[in-house]
Image (cartoon, rainbow, N blue to C red; front, top):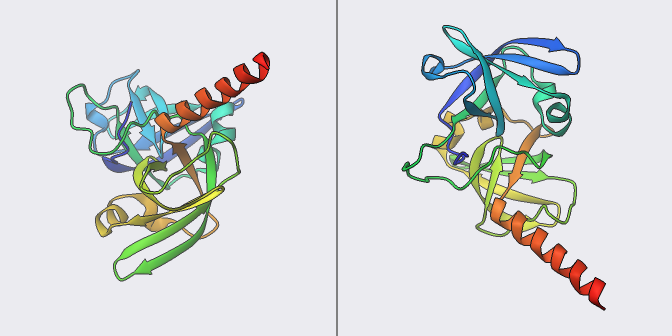
Length: 203
């Protein structure tokens, strides 16, 4: 489990293809503190560490992950948001994040509002993909607050600190990002759908 508070930026140093999978070597400031089998969120995608080197760690993305996230479009030299799994007893500074990407979204607008930034995203409509005003959303592993929620999109406002310490500052209109919707909202939608099926079966 994660909180959506990015610890640092990592660099994609090497990419190796193995059948339908991709192996990534990620250079990071906390590489020496990691262990094999630990979970780390990479742009919001929970991946298991498969190997450690002096300056980085290896992870593997299977074909399903590559199809549902932006990882298949990563290039060597690219920077990615990294967060280690939360420790029991830590402060929950963001919100509950599982590292399970629901879909990708396209950036449709970026506006500089005198130091802060307003970014708009659009995503494919789906019954379980719901945002609410002032609710939480995870964008490339970053816990953000939704503004201007719509059926197929939303906006977020980025403070200067987040802009400077995540890869959002490299984002361009047309780029894709990984989205994880609020887990509690997803449960509510699933329960509502199940309840409607029960009612329909009883009628």
